[in-house]
Amino acid sequence: MTEAAVREQFIEDDEVNPLAVVLSPQTYRMLPEALEELESIRAYDEALSAHDEAIPFEQALADIRSNRK
View 1 (tube, rainbow, N blue to C red):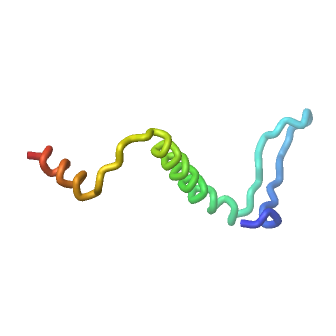
View 2 (view 1 turned 135 degrees about the vertical axis):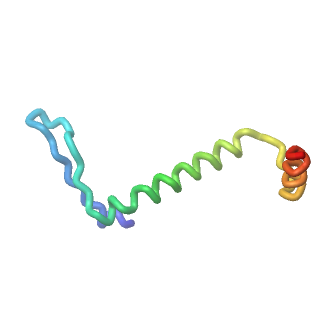
View 3 (view 1 turned 180 degrees about the vertical axis):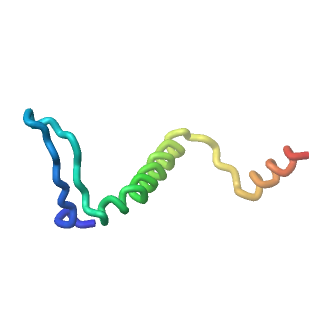
């Protein structure tokens, strides 16, 4: 979405305190996807900072299967 495409309108009270924001339907529909992407980025960053030892997928699968028995 380009900056020009976002044209929010802010509704304020008499003391110029924000009360609401009016968004276009396009912007409103885009919000859940943008939030999901942001959550994925944060989870990725958190995983990188954990410095946990990575194990191959096949080994992880074998470990899970052996723990189910």
